[in-house]
Image (tube, rainbow, N blue to C red):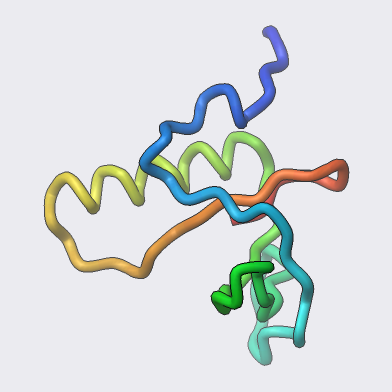
Amino acid sequence: MVDRDPRDLMPERLRRIVSVRDIGAVPMRNSSDATHALASDGTRWVKKSVSANDLLAEALGTLLASDLEVPTAEGAYWIDEHGERW
């Protein structure tokens, strides 16, 4: 299997966060080390650490919900040297 950079597979209509800083832990059990985060543009997010496959699954779910006009929270991704985040 060929490793690909997930950024190569992400459509332009998905929002990409350039930089983010953690501002506090999410106060409930979760499996993705979720934290509250603040993006460089001032938007607030719940940041989850995910694998490349999980990132693509989150993106697919977001795009499908949008196409089906299902109301969902906005999604965005951020990728750096430490891994993928949704």
